[in-house]
Length: 331
Image (tube, rainbow, N blue to C red; front, side, top):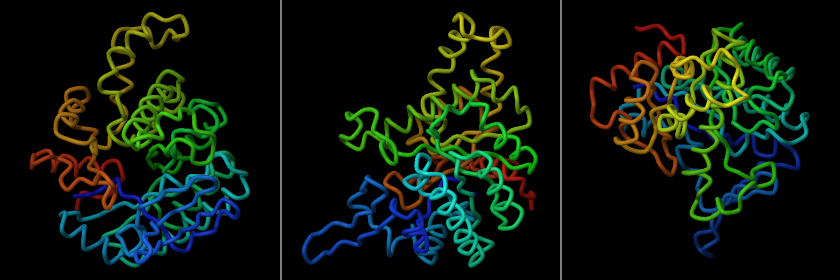
């Protein structure tokens, strides 16, 4: 199995964003002080990164063996996208992150690959870093958040999308928790880890709808986009989105034909790490299996041992899809 949803935390990137960190406190079991990870004014408490698969390659590969994962593509920690800080700090962090991620991949090149982080608040710098990451470092594709300070259909981002097409690499999108490096929009999401299981869903659904309704797919017809967690609630809202595009005054003519939105949704690729078999079946019912890829969020709070939920034929399809999406050979 090829796993396309697995985040990494890199020891050598600590402090690489200057005043924004990140900083890691391992905690103290003898006093009960919990580990914490600081990013700017945001602190994640109670997650142990050191001496876990997040930071230890040997532990990660042991878990991969246990889960039957042949190849895992490591992606940036969503806590450290740094999409809203000064561009010079974001550029410095992304360059360090991509260099160090390539070094980690080089320690186990048959088992690990990597996704590049980009300073998306500066699209020109992001395009430059994307070319460097793919052409010089051997990373497979860019991995960005959903909240970049401008909508995903903003014309300033077209140079990044065009660079993906130029390099023949897909684009991967995964949200960050609300309030990481910009003000929290809804304090209600701070309770019960709502950022993770509800906030992510909202962000992913909004990302997909913005890319469709905002014309990004029209402007970049060869662009492949994969969205985490099955695109959030897109499978449930596809019919409603289609109806809105047919009837609301803001909709362009090319989206008003029946089935126009559905045709564009079929272009997306979907991470099958959606939480359980019912959600997976809804995704399959909405979009079919041809653009679904396996993800586990290995070592994360909601890690999945088997993204296919026991369907061995679907697992084979996931693997073949991942190879197509990543432009890997079938052998």
